[in-house]
Length: 125
Image (cartoon, rainbow, N blue to C red; front, side, top):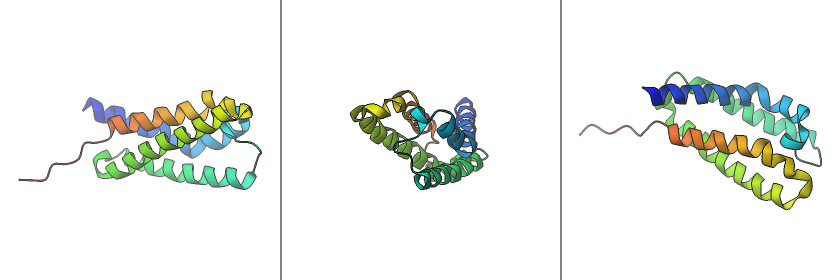
């Protein structure tokens, strides 16, 4: 039961951050959350994708077992996204702020979701 409670907390925290936190962070801390050069259309698209994902993560808190594939998708896509950004941030001097901004947050979210994801249900034998 403890594992499921922790998963629900992680889903809630990252769901809320995805829904209402990404856009403000891009404006309050652009060096750690916004890529340069600034493209408003890109920013709007990424905010829309993360806000949508956040809504579904929040919905998954009620019955995580029924949303296992969503949780795994959110986990793996966050790890991969963090990895791609890590490579680009280390190659581009002006983007190093991401190494202490969105890269570690995405990596943390992804790893936590993968570690805490509900185990697959066993079929009745």
